[in-house]
Length: 405
Image (cartoon, rainbow, N blue to C red; front, side, top):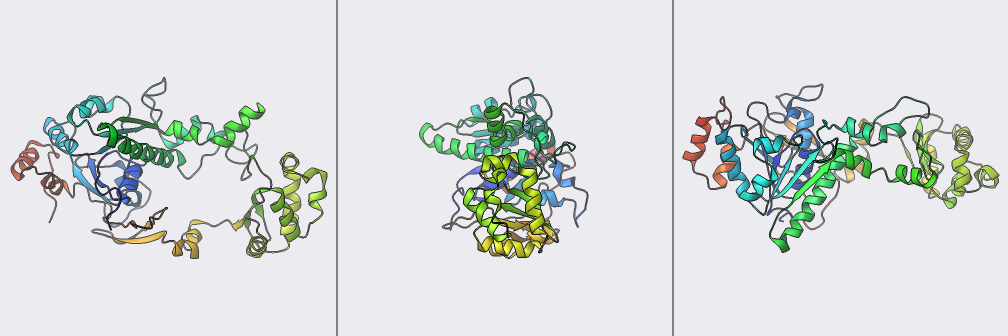
């Protein structure tokens, strides 16, 4: 069945994480994503990560660029820009993540491309947005996590600042950009015009700080690190059982009482220190000591089974080897295998959301650099002679050569 975005063509003029992930999400929903890459080098992520696969492309690149085609175009070359403008004429969406000002210097900014294709939805993803005193600063996930306040509340109380290993600023910016892009596409149906979208890692990270900002404005106190604990509920955190850590989410009084019954401490809800959530938050350290003393009597797996049977949210803390091999991950197809022309069968994460009527599929593995240059221009109706002329002129790189058939 036809996927919902099958009628949209996307130009992915981005690299590393936020932009490529955004475009991959659109590709997973059926869009024709054309990745425009610098000749000879391509997306920086092709050479990233501290381990090698069989070919030249990293596992990170493969993870962020499925369901795309790759063309090599030198956007600094006049003939390269001419070729790029031909792509723009027939595109619906463009995503770029250059530092503010670079797109204008390359003559691929919104104003230039809007004049060529007024229906183009153009999304820029940057570190701090296109305006404001920080707009020209380099933007990375690490920088966004530090600048938005998130690193000040991560880790254990009194410990060194920590960042989230999951790059939520990058990935969140990709999700917000995809949401804005599709909103603009829907709006275009009534106006006939595309529009400019300005997304940033900083605003994404700050916008996700709903608990922390609410605490600060509500109390006047600057939020501090809590380890794995929650700002609004207790007990709601990692705790130690006899053999390993687990998590418990007793987020209301009913669950709290059920937890106490399971661990053999039905007296705790009557203790003035733990009588309601406000009291439990104020006395969290003492509360956790008492809970862990009770949990020391059995392994985490046994406690999780008992708590779940009583309706109390609980789970073991898994590493990635365990998490990728759970019965739930298998049941939900969250690990898939894809055929790659160099790597052979490679594993990739499945689709985080499922469409019932038009189920997604990995239609293409991550592309080789420039693999589809001739194919794409041929589909757009550009003559072979014109494409060959661009190649001779260096539009696709001075050392470029047609990829093997």
